[in-house]
Length: 281
Image 1: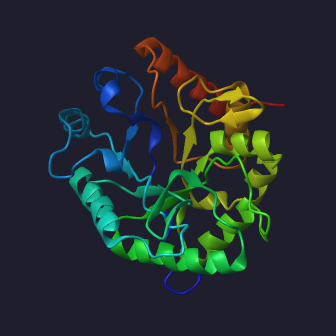
Image 2 (image 1 turned 90 degrees about the vertical axis):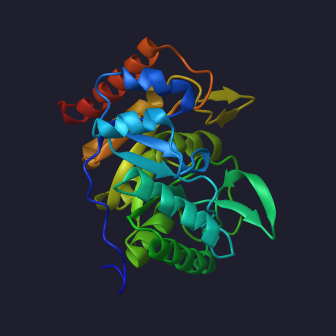
Image 3 (image 1 turned 180 degrees about the vertical axis):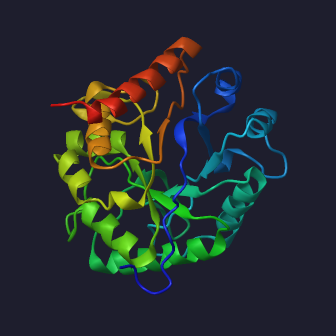
């Protein structure tokens, strides 16, 4: 059971979605089969929302603000100003939840410029637990945290990523945003079994899932969100769906934007991977 004061899981059915980007606004507006959206919170102003988001909201599509700079994985408490912005985004969009990354992004006023993995130690867990609770207290809706892609691991880790997330959920009740492309990245780069992670994660606290593509360069997998999702990533989505029914699955595409037809095909591939979980082996 979660510790006293722990928050409840998100419990929101989202469906199949796509990350809203200004470059994709018209594509998304005319795309059938999209049930919800995610928008990078740092890219919008709550008092002056993009017209496209307003149009899509009037159609009843939920929009989830997705933060990239809060930094709950640092030693310092989350910035009140950043938390206020996330809260304002959620209120302006009438969002069902907010998502962020379990990541280290800054220390001593210096920005890392990347979503870095946190040291998975007991002391780090204690600090991050308090940071997550502070964030939950400041937000008007539930919070979900995303696992990150890594190209290195800390030498003194005491817990696996799945164990760390499971204990964080136990202590705070925070939701999980599981990125299967990030699980694949960590398996490719660090040899960490993605299916072992799925077996150990508390998927009953799953808020939604990310799917994205990337590429290999000089033996390193780069999670760029600029290509079609490779089959191993979709295989991991099938594996996840064999263990739990995700409330939502969302496609991320952040640059080198493809045609409407290519995006529609990616969503179709995601649906196929999800349905494969129920097929006889």
